[in-house]
Image (cartoon, rainbow over all chains, first blue to last red; front, side, top):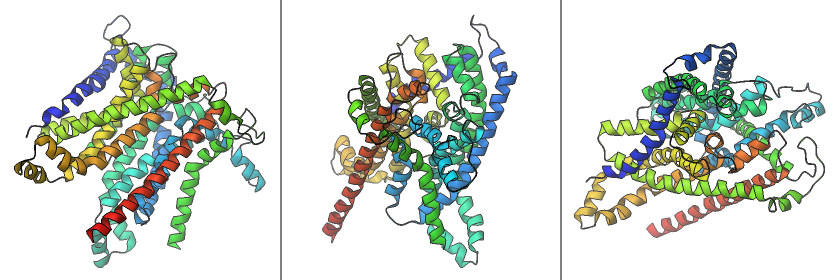
Length: 269
Length: 263
């Protein structure tokens, strides 16, 4: 049975539109406008503005990833325990919002968070102190958590579904209390889901330019904003590519961690 | 107590995820043009929406790109999964790693890498470049949905069908296809949704003059979003919600029938 040729079109597609484009970034990243090899583009990252943008992006994406994990794990466990038509419920909660445009959903947070916005009106009504986080890094973190939470919940939820309930029952039979069962049995078994969730949240948070643009009041620059501007405003593809390569080092690092824990790549969807 | 806490927690997450959506729906009925204040109830934007040619064009582009790209991705991706499944472990690992690249790589990097490719090969930016880009990021979703289903299939059933005289094509459609169909469908739906919701990759691969809803909204952010946009996204959201409810009702009835049959 020879079905291997069936992946021929995909192989062609992947080489043309995945591999070659990435090599183009490498090419542009290491050359200047006259085509000579240079490290200047990579060294762009060491300027004060770019360093600040990179560190802020790292900080905000790490905070968002941790917040997502803290929110998502209990959520995945609750969803896992519910026995009403689980899948359609999960779809309802996490996939349906995607049908409302991502930019509009993020913009809606402006309306909610503004000084005289919905949330503050409610807070004032309840005589509580106002929440002034719009156009600050806090609003960006909120935007990241809001947008990327599903990417953390779904892999953890999927891996929890795969755990054999008998394993948990066995642990309980052998005298483990619920904390021990969680810590020694459930958590280690769900680790691949957690790892892929972390990567799926960390990478888009680290590299976003839209969320910081919409909720940061375009004053706060993340590394994603810097790269986007290099391409769309400065038309400096070489510097933009160089910075992208720096960014990819972080992405590759998280990919390496992912492949170490999740050999089949199954935890992703 | 535990049950109450779980429900409470679910409700909180639900509010977090749906507060912006509720806001947008409310804004679509807002008579005032700015989103900052409420100017009374109106259905005006729903009427004007259909007369706004720019928005209708963007809607057409968005839906056309989502549909075509997810269909092509489903065909290429399903074929690829069948092929990858028949490969030895080494090639399988290599191809699956390549498949993971667009999934794990940052959208901004995927976007600019494709932009550089199109520039280098002199491909004119427009509808077709967006389409090519969307097919590229959609194929992995299909492969990653179909592969797990393929792995569950016992290869002997296919061999048995061949032994019993089925042609390979017939055996494929009667034996393998029914088992992987749910994977193919979910891959298709996932691609369609991802394509519809994409902004970043479209932002870098679109030409001037061609807009999807996302890029149109992004261009409007500075000058203020046209309220027709809220009306449109409310309509889209509600139609998908209705569709989802209908689809969820349907298979349950079918299942009941088949259970009765087996009795």
